Amino acid sequence: MTSSSKKTETAVLTAVKTEAYDIKNEIREMRQDFKYWLIGAIFVILVINAATVGLIASHVLH
Image 1 (cartoon, rainbow, N blue to C red):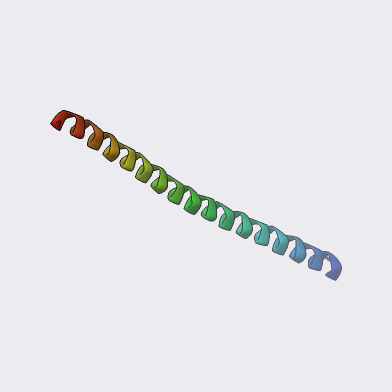
Image 2 (image 1 turned 90 degrees about the horizontal axis):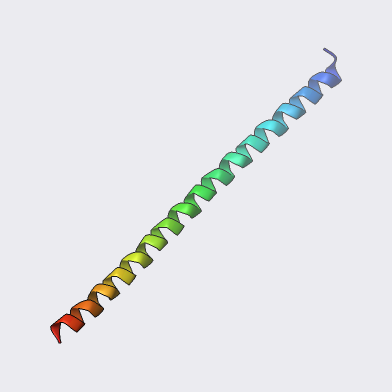
């Protein structure tokens, strides 16, 4: 192999590794965002359930 083709191969491999690393980080961030979104959604559902139970209890007790 010539010196320039070796340099080209090294540059391509470096670019591919960098791209793979970026994609891995993006997936990690998306997972993190999804986790927080899921926790938020569960929290909202629990609050709505608590409010509903409170309303029903207040109607039953009166």
